[in-house]
Amino acid sequence: MTPVRAIGASGATRGRRSSRPSGDDREAAILATAERLLEQQGFSQISIDDLARGAGISRPTFYFYFPSKNAVLLTLLDRVVDEANAATGDLVEHVAEDPLARWRAVIRRFYETFRSHRGVALACAEVKGTNTEVRELWASVMEEWVRRTEDAIRAERDRGAAPGGLPARDLATALVSMNERMIYATLANDGPAVAESDLVDVLLDIWLTSIYRTTAPYPD
Figure 1 (tube, helix red, strand yellow):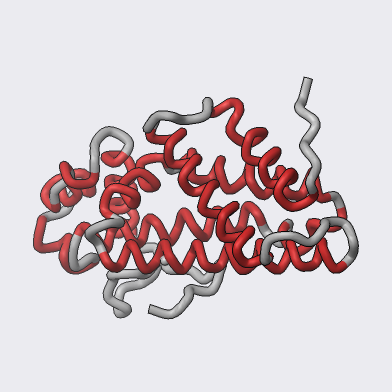
Figure 2 (cartoon, one colour; figure 1 turned 120 degrees about the vertical axis):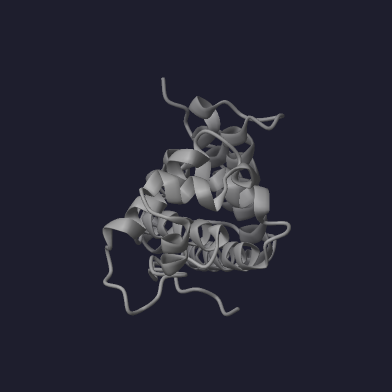
């Protein structure tokens, strides 16, 4: 999930020759085609010809922008991660201001970002076991979220809001990994899975119970 990628660092130019101007219309068309097709079918079913045709370019022209369809997927994943990071902002670093509201917002915004790019999320899960670059990029993303969560847990313990217990690193790893699996199961309908309408509340309750030994009030 290769060095750990700094959270919020843009990877939008992955796989594109640096001599091309950013925001090139044809590159954008390739990416838009890929995301549209991923909402309809699995990544393995999509070909270079499909991407080129959907973008209105030839197959040789496609290779001017991306060396492979894997590079297209990596660029899409980079962008979704950047969007999730922008959506959550510094909520984790300021969780002490309102723990319940802040943790809920972090979980909800992260989930909603990946839900809005369901095809990309499912494609990455599909290829992660066999694609080293996707696996390392995702591992770096997970590592960054574990680190931020660990720091927040330590801070909450230091200020007396949360009791001691499991090592903060271990607890953070378990919570972040749980979110990853449960969000995937819900998006993919890969049972057993929690209903989309309940997922954020279920995750939040487990986080609060694990960190503070308390539960979240459920909305009416």
